[in-house]
Amino acid sequence: MPASAVTGRLSVTVLDHDADVIETVRSFGYRVFYGDATRLDLLRTAGAAQAKILVLAVDDMEQSLKIVDLVKEYFPQLQIVARARDVTHWNALRDRGVMRVERELFESSLRSARNALELLGQPPDAAQQAAEGFRQHNLALFEKMYPHRNDRAKVIAVAKQGRRQLEAQMAHERELLAQEGRDALD
Image 1 (cartoon, helix red, strand yellow):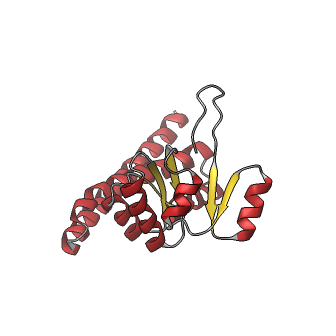
Image 2 (image 1 turned 135 degrees about the vertical axis):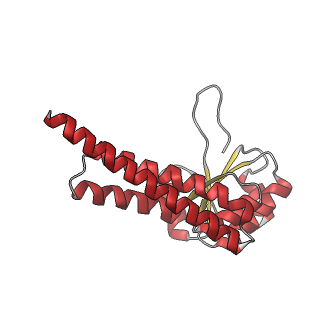
Image 3 (image 1 turned 60 degrees about the vertical axis):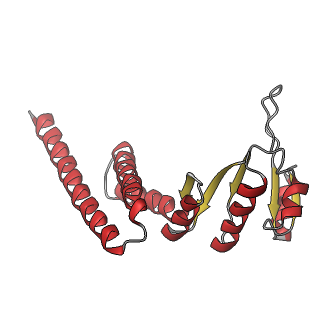
């Protein structure tokens, strides 16, 4: 967990409740602890008080939120990078002040879409640009919806507006591609 300023190397500690994972991670030379990371004593033993960053990659939403609550209360110096299973989990993490959150299913869906675009004939750089454009649009839309997360009607209105903006953006991009094609023929 703590980084060494002299060598530039990072010291990583892994906590997991799966014995097979523990053995695998240990075989790579990492410091590991077996147990439930919602236990304050385990977090202390693992070195959370000296750590700078906690990467939270727990499948169970309630368990991950409990860990965040413990860390915020007892180890406020820890910056948290978290994985969210879905939008509900993302919102709950943000409610707790966790700002570096990756949506697990979203990122893999973007990679799948990029692969599909390439299989449909788009050059890899164009497929990457389209996926990244959608990613940025979606993240911005989530930021707009977040303040209204408890008002279903407002969330739906913001989502519809976002969909219209995305449709307009995609139409514009199609027009640019068509224009580039026409220019290439001239």
